[in-house]
Structures are given as structure tokens and as C-alpha cells.
Length: 193
Image (cartoon, rainbow, N blue to C red; front, side, top):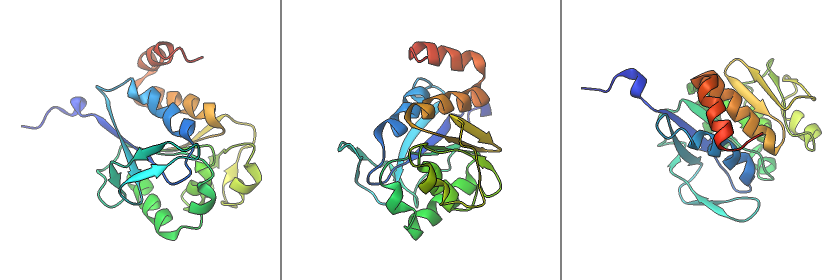
């Protein structure tokens, strides 16, 4: 028969696109990667193949939006590519339906511009990268943007500001999902202050 419910691993999908920011992506994944017995991580892209980060290194996509498994956690990073993807209708539509179907959704840095563009966080509190604040917040006029926050939680949505704040946010989400003890051991094990 099926294993008991508590043994079921959570599935975390990180959406990437050409020009994604490496640390936005791998900071949070490094934290969740310490919980291999509890979380399975997949990279999700609009198309199969490799996706080039803003810094150059490429990442191989595990699934496309079309064939990805049902997720428990959905994350999206920032990076220069967000400035192109806010105008990519098919990407936004796929990301939106995936976010609607996922219980926990988190954006890092300017990834919140993409989340805002879907309309899903209209009326909710959110934050984004301070350096791109004006551009990112203009993608969602109805969002209650909080300028002075490292990360913000509103309902099922977590949004974070710049690079290292994404890691803080990942730990806050981990705390919500798995409790303080596990989260502290991950933070300490990663020597993350």
C-alpha cells in the first residue's frame, strides 16, 4: 500500500528562466537541500533543456510547466531575465496556474515582479529588491508593497528583497513547514547567521 502520509516528501519546484540570478535560486535551495529526507527539489522551466543564469552557468530543467508534478512549494528567483519574462504571456499564465495550485509560493528579489504581474498578490503585502524597487513595484499597482522588509509573509505567499534575504525567507518558510528545531539545525549546520 501507499506509505503513511507523514513519510511523504514535500516537492519544491524552483522556476528558472534565461537570466535568473544564481544566489536567489541556490541560496534557498541550499537550505531546503539539507532536508533531503523531507523535501525533493526540482528545477522547472518554460521549455526543456538548459537555462543560462545571469552570471553564465547553466542549469538543466527537470520539468516544464506542462509536465511538472504537483508541487507543495513553488519558488521563483529574480535576475535580469525578469524584465523580459514580465512580458511573456505564456510563461506568466503557466506560472500563475502553478502558483494557484501550490500551497506555498515564494519569490526572491525581482521574482516578486513576476508574481505581481499574475495578479495573484493583488491586495496582499509583498516586498522586492530595493535596487529595482520602482520597476518591480510598477508590475503590480494593486499590491501592498512594503519597502523596508527583508521578507514578507501574507497568506500562502512569501516574498523577499535582495539576494541573502531569500535565504532568510527560505528559513522562515522552513520554520512554518517543519518547526523551529529543524530550522535551527539547518541554519546552524549551514553556518548561516
